[in-house]
Length: 149
Image (tube, rainbow, N blue to C red; front, side, top):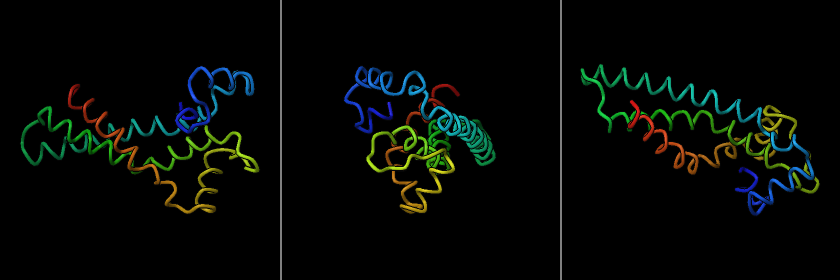
């Protein structure tokens, strides 16, 4: 899906056909390692932040949070996590979408990607997608905690 969103392929059918033809079955797993390296800590951090925010809420109000408050605490937890984890998300996206650029030396992994981006483009580029990422993740996780807690 990252390659479709990056405009490398016009649709899912084209992506599946082209990836299989040019990269084989392994092409479907490009970026899988960086994706796990980003997702697992993200979910863990969000859960830890949410629990800590719930504890702070209870100390301040002497009661458990309501559903709306759980939504707000979950949103705050998600936003905090996104701000910390966005560099790994940027690296994962770049690794997955790095095919086809003429003269481009491919990234060899997450550390290589992060160090090259900082050196070649500046640290701010790692946070370029922060706004859209927050807009996507914060409401989704807020709803999740508001409904399930």
